[in-house]
Image (cartoon, rainbow, N blue to C red):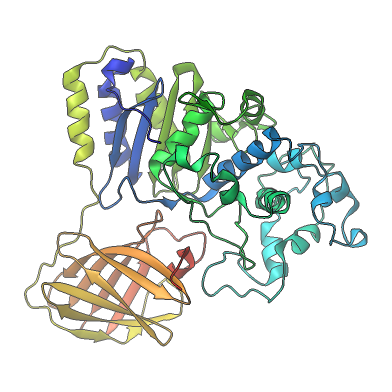
Length: 483
């Protein structure tokens, strides 16, 4: 299923306001990757910053929580799962004598509303006990047969469940595992046949724990239209097109505030208006979001759904631009000329590639990594000519991974290691006779890293623009199996 298309002016939207929003995202350094907006169920604006593209899924970090909660909602609607079910019921193998008494009071609804009873996010303690990042990516140090659930129940809630809000990865991880226990499969399998076709995808690539379970709280990879369609589902009270997918009761409950509320000066105003079942309440409407600028925004007062993906750390800044530029554009007179200008603007968006600026460049080996924040497993690189392109050979342990580097364009490659594959695109070349530079975008994530090598010193620096939450190794972002 694809959402129907229209124009801004036909749906009562002034395209000039949408244009100003897009321009402001760029001017304020918010590094946008995609933007889609629907009014009255019709997509009126869509654009991708090349090399990001409409058909390419990307890591949405904590927006994954909304996907997991939606799977829970589907099971609740089918009578297969109760919000009032104690979470321990689903894990009979856990020795009750080894868990804190308050765990016996934790219900499914407490996990959904982040009111388990921990005063801080307990996931780092789970990871420490598991001696793993629990990313499910190559290089994780999982203990054979070890199970994250056992480490979750080894943590101790200190407040009575339902009384204290704490944004807590543990809560959604338990929901993911409960979905698997109820169905015998997992979150993605629950969505298959019920929702994935409506989202316009066949699958949702997902980071998994060392036992192969979806993390639930992070790791989902979604296309921008899938994000927008999920927003439209909740905006429609569970209805997409002419089909009911979720009950209105679930959608209403999922978007009802539980906590926190704290509007003191200095507190980001759109993170202090309450939390539902994986949704943040905000100045207008509600949203799901993920680190580095991934947004699913629902504005019921305006019958608007919005999706934005990007790479930045100032999440409030994106919402401030929504309030400043988008809200005034709704129910404001537009024009076909403004519509056409917006289409042209969005069609021309791109992340500027680097260009090979020196004909003097030639093959070179860079033996030492210096000034790098990629994993220490990356010990050097070499640069070689291959036809009209350069190839950057990255050394990772004893392996060499080839990255094709385009000049003035983004060239595609796939990194493969430990049974995983990771698509990347890169551009660059010789900045001068001594210096080779390249930007490498991990294209199914928000992230990119910069390479700079010097012939005169034999050193190469590899630095992330923004360090992924999964860790410093690009391969830790891989979710696709190559074997």
